[in-house]
Picture 1: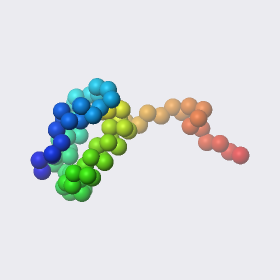
Picture 2: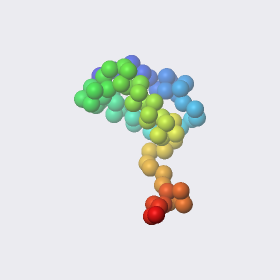
Picture 3: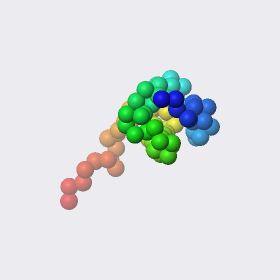
Picture 4: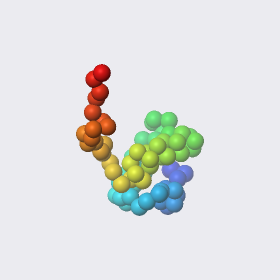
Length: 77
């Protein structure tokens, strides 16, 4: 599948400069598998990329950041 969205488009939408390698990795995977998981429709692809950019800090992180901080500790009442 040829993605209708290019790396340049994503960089323009990003709030900060993330990792170029992580961005390329995502685009390579999307090019290969997007149609298999229903991301071959533009509106779905845009929603997916928006969520991915938010969760990854515009491709700055590629794994979960976890404290534990006091706010993340379970509360037992």
